[in-house]
Amino acid sequence: MHIASAAATTAGYAMPQLWRVLTKTGYFLGLSGAVGATATYATTVRPALRSAHRTAEDASVLRGRSAVFLAWSGVALSVAGYFQLAGRVARAGKGMPFGDALAPSAQWDFLRAPAAKGAWIAQGTVYLVQNAVLVVTAAALIALFRPAARRHADRIALTALPLALGVTLITAVPTTAPAGLDAWLNLLFDQAHIVSGVVWLGGLALLVALAGTRRRLGDGAGLLWADLWRRFGLLAMVCVGAVTVSGLWLSWRHVGGISQLWTTGYGLALLVKVLLVAGLVAAGAFNQFWLMPRIVRARAADDTASLLHLTLRHFPAVVWGEVVLGVAVLAVLPFISGSARTEAGSPKAVSSGTLFAGGAALTVALVASLYATARVSDALARRRPAAPATV
Image (cartoon, rainbow, N blue to C red; front, side):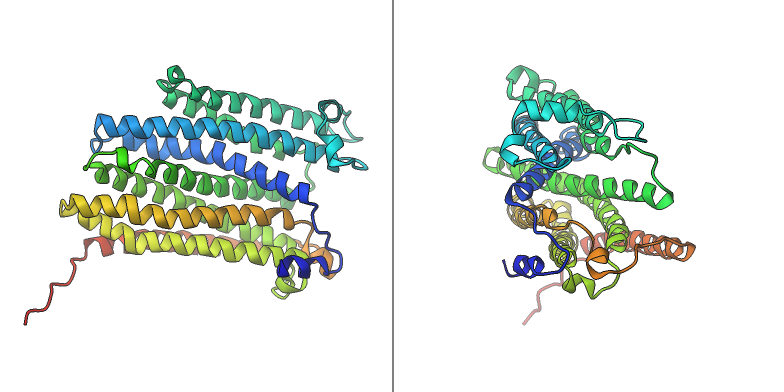
């Protein structure tokens, strides 16, 4: 509340209305479920359930829980999409009360509005296509509530994944030709930031939901879960890299100096988001450097009890904290509006060869650090615990 009050008193910053906060946060929660859960199912859950480390009973339990989670993700996406569309209608043109924007007739008029002068396609048409894809995606996922459809969960999830990605990617289609390279990069990095962020959060939420089945799993499920955490760790690492690189570009575009992080409303909201994401990264580092090595050692020692405890007790507890931090990040997003540069009267950001060279160097350094993280985690896993001292 103190930060929100400080932001509200910053010249040039407009606090978002409550309906804007709820619709934008809800929309990204819906995307996290649809995109993140389907991506994690395709890259992590499905391969693990086909490995030699699972029993048929454990695989059936986890596949069934995954199907239910995906089905509820479809419900969340459809509800969030409806309110997000109403929010767009309320902000369009001269604006209208949010309550009026909830009317289907107002939304239909918005979607059929003619193209602006100089545009190759109407903005409403772009949103019409987006919402049509959203409805198809949600319907495919909701179908998983039916037991008959769950027999085809793999096929449905793999079909829904590109459709769910399309829900956000379609909104990036420009209605006029972007003016220069920077404009194209803005579109690219904005979508990279969104997709990597929702895959990260949605994947965490799916695995937490699956961990809730531990009482129904066999004593040997630790092996399966060790594989699940390992696979998702690789996916999360890619997401961290993409979020970091895209976030640096977007921050440079809108923040003209470090001091603007605490002297502008945009900067304050961004600073809170950065701190929350840093908490997520710290939790991920704890998993990589403390939990994963212990899981690997327990697996090598064939310590079934310890493996089960680490993978289905300790690990999910940390991931629960990550989910809470991730939801907090989404709650902050509506407050990151406008530009710190505009509020502070700084000139617009203009790219240069020096900037691209520096960005390339930072990207290489980030990739190297993520690779080093994986190598250090492996080294810690191979290290034998110290033998107890003899008296």
